[in-house]
Image 1 (cartoon, helix red, strand yellow):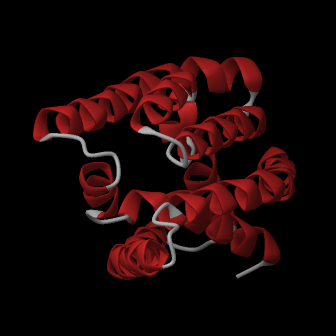
Image 2 (cartoon, rainbow, N blue to C red):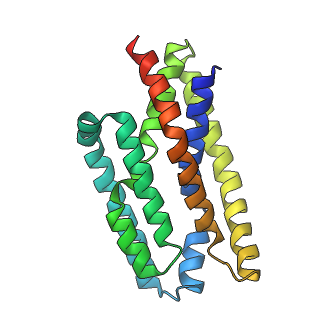
Length: 190
């Protein structure tokens, strides 16, 4: 595969990783924030609703802003959301609400990854299989990594380490997006 596709796969991996925290967020909310089951449910419901709204609004915003700018905004929104988790449940809810578009952060990278692979002549079935394999690896490794970060962070007095990782992933993704998406846009336009 070429450098452009490699950048897009890396970007997609960074953006997808937080989706596979396993039960870490729920355990954190119960043990660290002392939320009861109803409050945990409200937190996850708010996150789910923001996802529906973000994905619904993304089409209009992509047409208005362009894919790269939308991707930057959505990733910055996700960064804001994860930053809120470093503080408290209330701050997390506020940051998730303000960072509403964060749940749509993967659209640009995944869409362009598929489009660019097609331009390279890679069969769509292979692209879908490779994408599924990437997600499968993240599903296996994510809960292990996030769980260990929580356990080791808890022992060290920093149980919020899984969220620190998400903040770092979003910062790296923000830096990588301008390189990954414009390069593909040039190819798509030729």
